Structures are given as C-alpha cells and as structure tokens.
Image 1 (cartoon, rainbow, N blue to C red):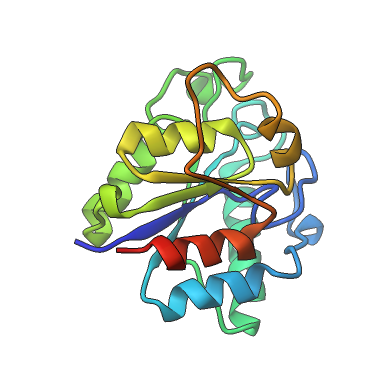
Image 2: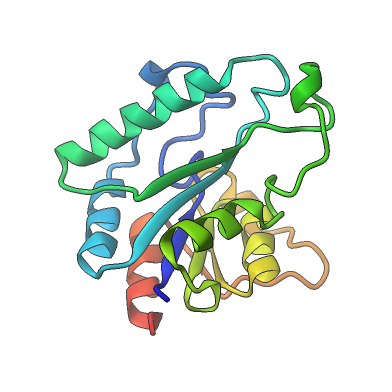
Amino acid sequence: MSAAVFLDRDGTLIEEVGYLDRPERVVLYPFAVDALRALNRAGIKIVMVTNQSGVARGFFDEAMVDRCHRHIADLLARGGAHIDAYYYCPHHLDGRVPEYAIRCDCRKPGRALVDKAVREFGIDPARSFTVGDRWVDIGLARTVNARGVLVRTGYGAGEELKPPAGMQADAVVDNLVAAASWILANHR
C-alpha cells in the first residue's frame, strides 16, 4: 500500500476567497505547483479532500465544484504537476438544500473521503499525511491515523494560536512548499 497526501483546497493550495463560486476566482499560491510537482516526483499520491458546504447552503451546485476542480487541474498541468483525485463533501447540517443538509461521514474530520481513496488507490493512511490550514485537517489525520501538517496560509496562522484541547499537529509550517519539504523528509 502506498502513501498519500490528503490535501485541503482553500487556504492551502489556493487563496482563501470565501465560498468559491466560479473558476475565475481560483488563485493558486505561487509555490503550489512546485510543491505538488515535488510530491509527484517522489511518487506520493495527492488526494484533495475539501469541505464544500456552499453546495448545502445553496450558494452553488456540485457542477460548479467540479468546474473549479477542472480549472485547478488545468492550472497545475501547465506547471507539470497534478492531483490524483478530487474528493469533496457537499453536506452541512445548516444547509438549506434538503438533500445536502444532513450529517455525514465525509465532512472533515470524518473519514469517508479518505476511506474512498484507500479503496480506489490502495493507500495506507498510516504512511500518509494530511495538509491543511484548519484544525479539522489535523483532526482528519487523527481520525485515519495519518500525520497532520498545519500550514499558516489561509486561516492557519490564526488557527495555530487556538488549538482545540488535546489537538496537536505533527508539524506547523509556513506554507504548502514547506509542508512538502517536511513530508519528503518524513516519508517512509
């Protein structure tokens, strides 16, 4: 079984813009392509796992999430990098779209998206990493027995100052390129 990086989207790979409701608002961090390309070259799978409650809230539909992900894939491909799979949770209990206003196991820190990747790619969560700008990303790492890296981009700098009781990241770094460097140094 192989290792993977379970990568958050907003505030980690791309600039945080609130609810991303159209591809034109996607702005990759300037170091994102280099970071992912280094992980690609090392043979580590990259799986995006992102909470997209804007679907449940009625701000946009799943087709728009897919359009944004295709746009991100195009931007990464231009730089010679790629993400192996894009998974997202469209649910939120406070949603106003009834079929999405549910409790689920795919909303981070729930494990359903990681379990899907494990089945589809033969990933070993214990050899894997989560990277994100929120404590739910570190919570996901704890849920699936992976190592969690908190980045200070997006909401990360503020999150670092107020960890939930008993929650600790395996590493706290400035950005995705520093996370990739830490992962490459700690990959087994």
